[in-house]
Length: 65
Image (tube, rainbow, N blue to C red; front, side, top):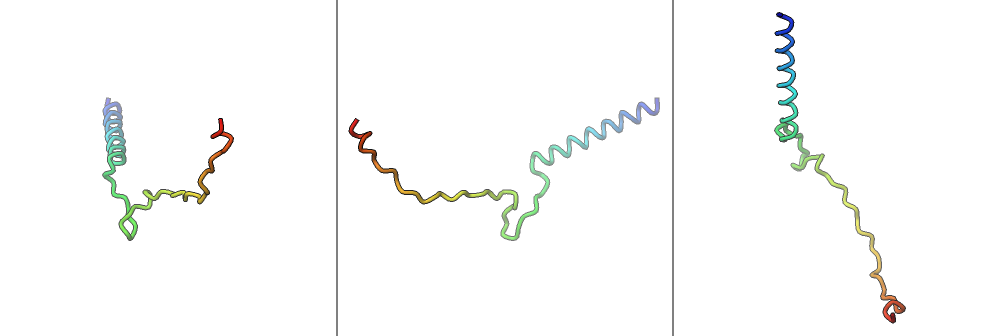
């Protein structure tokens, strides 16, 4: 009987710790280390440059139809 009660207490404690850990992660309550300029290193996005291309020319055959 004592082992069963101890198991249930440990199971409840593990469930409480799992719930607490997940809620701290999903609600962003755990502080994230910021860089020197105040931004977070995880919020950086890669910016793809627009290639410089000439505007499309009008197709005279398409306009004739």
